[in-house]
Length: 214
Image 1 (tube, rainbow, N blue to C red):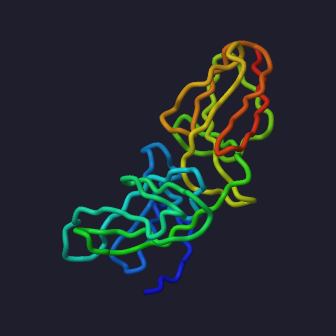
Image 2: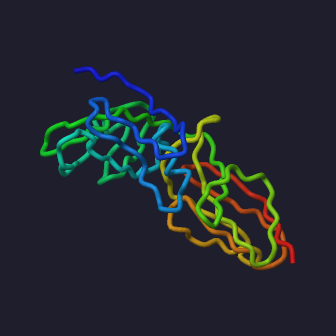
């Protein structure tokens, strides 16, 4: 049986958007932190980045039945693999994500995987709202905090998934703290000065010029 690929559609309203399986039996969406409002309204609307991991939620939509225990599998592990509820991008391409119950395929989704060519830094407010791209230079006062995430891109398109990231900065100027996700950090301004925040993820590097004022 040949499966024809389809694209996940982007969110068009201010409510959570799920992607419906090809057989109409299930819906899938990214797993979102309670405060990650952009994730909650975004749905699965882009390819997964190679080297990144996307946690997903899948629910049964068929009427008149309770939700059975579900497992997931990749139809082509050379494109992506599945570990629990995580879809891990391996190489560019498209393959089916199989939703199984008791060894029987209940539904499937086509998942695209794309290699990123850039990492961009996005700002997050205290409430978890993602404000968007950061400019190349930011000024803070001593004691200020700034939430940042490293997001993979392919050209103008933002890709999905979290990737392990390494952050470097002058600790006398700014302290870099873990923020609960592999690609997110909280920067705390410690002392007056200028530092370059260097972020590396998926073999790509980006920087942010940060000035702390007294």
